[in-house]
Length: 185
Image 1 (cartoon, rainbow, N blue to C red):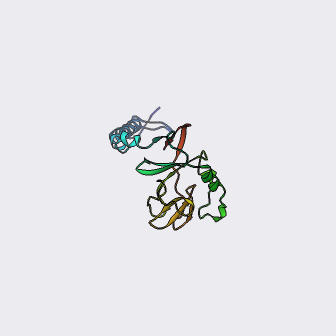
Image 2: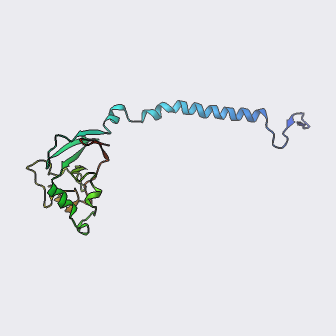
Image 3: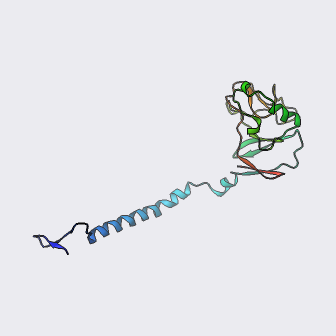
């Protein structure tokens, strides 16, 4: 029961609610919902468009690549080196003393299948593109890639071996879709 004050209006019993409390809550909830509805187009506008999302992955057909051959594909505007390594390159990469490396990383951590090396072709020193993809390119002292801008030498696993580069060539996220195709991204 409501008690009456000297002014004649109702007062709250302990723990009770009034119609005014309900109206405050309902108004606040409607204002919050209206704000979300009003700003949603602006939030949605910041999402990447369909053409940008299409560039987020790149499918690469590996079947035409011969043993010892390398190709360059573009993923997110970056060159990605795909090399089908020879048995000698695989053995050379696996038999490196990790203590001798500036950025120690075993070859097995850099490849999913030993025959295929997939890495981002950007020097980790200042962002140059190393040579070594074409048959006539200099490959440096370790048979991998050579960045002529500042003299970084990478081995057949894309690990920095000599020069100013602070770390190995970066690896993109990729997966084998089947034996003859990979999806980068």
